Length: 528
Image (cartoon, rainbow, N blue to C red; front, side):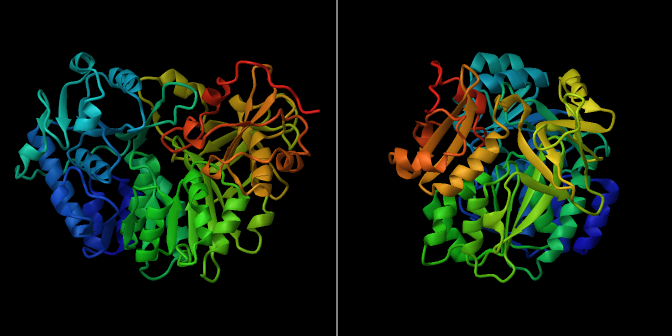
């Protein structure tokens, strides 16, 4: 089977992650997958696999889950320590026709309990460390059974004890049935459970498949994305079907990342925006850990131009580019744009791109007040295409409230230029009176102060704009340098510096702005 044949099959029949490893093995069984950590559920597997071995492990885990009693159409909540075996277990759940619910290991026990109750007696697939954080009585009331992927625990079924179970035939669910459930970031409260189908997952691959034609040959691609996120489905599917050797990174420590990049020399690096910000100082490493990268890629949040420029400057590849995709779990990739070495430092970080070609999403900006949306009067950003998630599990009313026919409200505000570029200014809930765009302020000031590792402008108790700053190694910031850098933004209060470790973050490292804003009980004093 050729990769293009497999891709056409997905276009027609949808993307079933339980079948993906087997399809990829049929394309090229020798495609390598390398990990920077051991698999908890399969410690004997090692850190270097072929796709054929990967597919066999998924089939083996599916057999064990079947022997544990999991059956088609059941919900299986997968909540375990971050590890690449999460994605393998998710594929195994899907392979036997059950619906995997990916829960981030960053979620606290109380939130997990609420989501388990919403799922109405799911199977919980976990590991010892995570199981120990959960309330046993609550689990007894809210789950059908508990399975551990590693570590034995009383009252739980251990997958390790089911090794060698008879293999079972895959179960293929309907194209529009629930296939995978992920969750939103939870920046404003309990996360919503986002339901994806084989159709919606397959549709999302279409524009990205053609964009990858820019990469030729079979150089490695490095992926540093949360294993639980819907983006992981697309990233793994695209890489395996196009036969790219894959380096799956779990560790985020810059020194460890540098060693992996130097050893494997990837041509493409996909990572979270905040991870790239944490790593950007590696651009100064004389060994050149980024020198092999031709394409840097990021989704989830818009990334600061200064970071893009620094990364591109560290690449030795001709035509190196940074490709940014704007989207969210509910809609997948909405718009994108490429930034190049010669111009990234001059880019407007609020311009997140244009609709991608080849059957991608459509975008519109809707007025919030009856006036035409524009730079000084942003409108609501909406998306339409068949890749939009099917529903919020257990919260159909909340889902319906976000839809206007075929159009989905992203919750973001912005405008489109005469050339059609979508400018993202803020989340609507985060807008601050008198501030055109908090994100724009952050772009500008971060570009002027390289000693800053993070800047977040949040709403204070009197609706003023409070800049919260973090610095490299938590060193004190020179007040005079701050005043010069922020001089054009007199609406800002004096900055509040906190250790970076104290920033409240989501599973995808987004700063939880509302939680951060709640830290300020006294009104800030405007700068004079």
